[in-house]
Image (cartoon, rainbow, N blue to C red; front, side, top):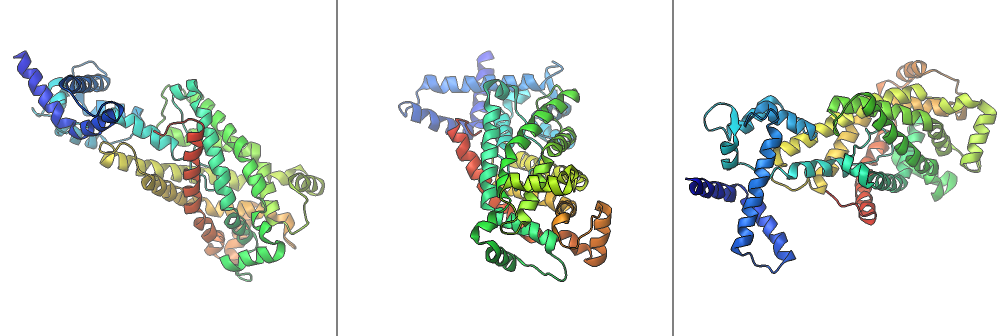
Length: 438
């Protein structure tokens, strides 16, 4: 009877893991002689029997000898995958033979629909660390790292790769970024600046090099902002009393937004410098330090925090919508294709990153525009010092609702190239630093 049960279990294992078996054997054949003998075949089946047992035990937290829908929901939540109770029940129904809505070990190991669950954490880590997309706003919720990555020092390699990718992508898209700032500040009904006329105007005024004005300080601030955001995020997670490596979406939003506020508050003077340098005329400033000295001398220390309030308020809709859209798209992909593919393809990652970033920017753009105008008030001839609410009223009165979205076109045009360049460079730097892609 025992041998019969083992034979039956072996048959089900063969059916359940056929596709994964084929992939694994191809890998093993490359490493060995290309032949598979009976002993290797038996070892393969035994290993997967053990894997199934380990997964079953990790789900069966109450040590009740059976797995319920709640067990599946809670276990996946710890891995960063959020599914509803109804979805978990549908999974159980495919395995449950006696209608109890629970699955014991015999039902679990005999289920023909099981896929190798060991891939799920790998897929999630791939999602987490392959999507540090930088589109120049840099208000995204910080990345999370496991305890293993902290101990091995992989976290700083990921951060270094993300910073390098951000620097390259910002440099490539700097002309569009400067054009956006010019349209935000100088665009109006009387000055209908478009993309081509704006670029031509910049080249005419200062040559080709003028297209990159303000990019230097924009690149320099990546490193301190990323480091501050990461450190603040880790401390806030501890203060929240979370013992889990992966936070829920609401906790991530709160911790990420607070970390963003702390980091942005510290480096905000660099944001003002970036705007002033982007708007400067040829010969107005000799460099970053000269610009800072002139602002400090002529306007005082408070000038370095103009537009601070709308900037901080903009973090909340940007980070919240960006994270919510990204998590939704990620979880949808994982539920539909996560058990069939080893990891999401490049196109999936780029599409999710582009859509989530675009949605986040669309929601926070009016606040970003008001922030930029407040930062630039002293440089605009005849402009008075207006508050945030005063600027909103002024724009609505003179330009209408569309005035709050001036410069949106070049801002959106840079999203796809910025995300794509950021991803490619990120992957190359990771390989250089010895970080294996999940």
